[in-house]
Image 1 (cartoon, rainbow, N blue to C red):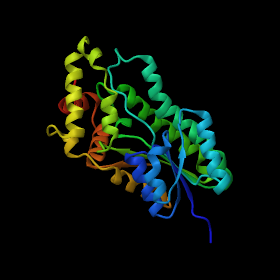
Image 2: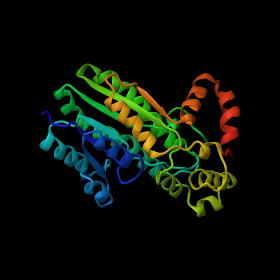
Image 3: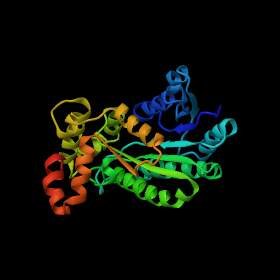
Length: 286
């Protein structure tokens, strides 16, 4: 009997990563669920998944995790780049060290891990790389420019990589969720500008409205379009599972009604129409 295919999934302590690891495990993959803090993976280990410590911003951690998979199972067959977080702040006020941290995790960490698994995939003549992007990989709104720029980068890198490695039998897929009801939302709120910064900011009112807006989405304090159409981590995991199992996966999988509709609107509407008819109506704007 052939060995089950191996899947390496990042950011599995909660949310999309955890749901994806469970989905692929149920589908028969040998899943290596990873997180910066391996103690957060105890429940997955108890269910039979392999668990590894992996900090995508640490080259030694990246090499150790991939080596552990390859030594026991050969090449990584499926890589799901899910680890990431969202930074909130205006362009003018956000410190460059916070911007660098955002890109170290969301972009450079993804690049480093993918570079590390590609030689094994190439030698095996097969492999699937799934990069978890966002609807904000297609457009950006005030206060989220640096997070959204990181997802735009993931989109561009994925497009280039898809064409570079197709001849080696490697598929590259983007998954583009709308708002997801997971602990990621609280993490995003934790990365809002500190209260002291907001208090003395020329954007003070905007920061207050932004905090209230995301509180409404993730904690349900009031009704919003994004909150109404929030999706679950399991819905995103289901899309990832379909992409991984497909013989000819699509290049992009928008997940949720809001993702499909707003990405289509962004594609069709001129900038000024999109800004006025959608962004200014649905998001806080200074």
